[in-house]
Length: 312
Image (cartoon, rainbow, N blue to C red; front, side, top):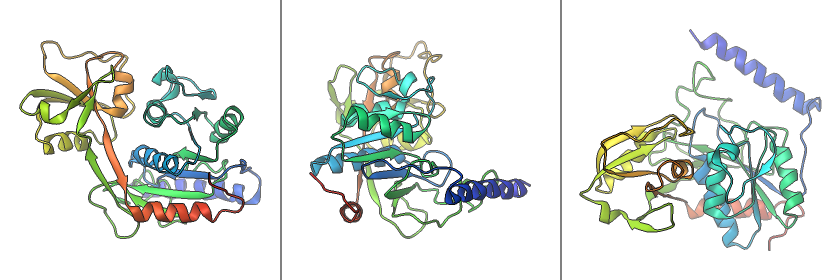
């Protein structure tokens, strides 16, 4: 029944693309290479762990990196830099996590081209910009596109709202990366996903997961697929007395800790940047996401081939 609506969606998407190709809508370029990490399927596909993995890889090569994002779910709509004391409600939970985890400059704006310009003005030594999401944001010219898929693959292969696709697949892109543990289709690069051996406290202390074994825990996740986090905790031998699954990007302003529950509270690293304000005793369990060596080799080759690009 939704298939006719998906044709309307596809037609509007095609017209928008035509406007950009004809120059009626402008695609603008900044002075450094731009790597866009995005997806064609609606909902979270694991883009933020990919962004952080790419950023850390470039940092290890001595390349000065910055990140731009729309800051989905934030209560502001201006262009601003994400700082160490920024309220995640003002900058978005994912940009706050990226800055906290990597230390690189991160800017958010409704239009990513505005964020990129502001980042380069404030941090002129930046050599590469990574865009968190934005595969369909054609106003910002990009040099490398990374399309991320989780275990859902392309679902039923139909466009929104009859299916999960924002745009048709296959489409042209430079690299395909499967972020899940069971890729739904062949082709592209893979990655390993494991939980870190230590959970992090709001005070910076580390608590080994092994020390939590046998203790009743309450696990909380406000991500696209909360059950995936719960399954990974159970796979590490942890006992989940309670699980709390909340909507992705949940703001926690209205959240109240269940009364009478004395279990240790564990959450995702993404949720911790907001949850710690309400529950400073919560332990964040980071995800260690490691793309294959072949993925990074392909990325390095594409980056090195760009005209005028010089690494550190």
